[in-house]
Amino acid sequence: MIRETRASRPSHPFERVIPFIRLSGLALLALGLAIGLGWLSILPAEIGFVIAVVGLLEMLLIPAILRRLIRKKKDDFLIGNRPDDRADIRH
Image (cartoon, rainbow, N blue to C red; front, side, top):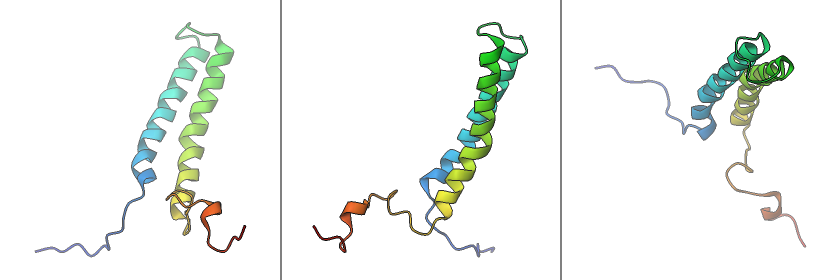
């Protein structure tokens, strides 16, 4: 019998979303290039290239930002704690 040696840790909700963000960025990139190169004439070519750049940024930057948030040891804001809720702040 094989036992899994990896410690189970609670997965962050962003870990499940990252592949879908990359896929949607790839779809935007492909759509933008198709419009920009004239294969689809539904929008002007300039707008197509802008869509392609937005798709590229979404595919590369957003997952990196989310991974940085996941790795952050203290993401109190994401679990609902706000800076106003700290006990050391006196009004």
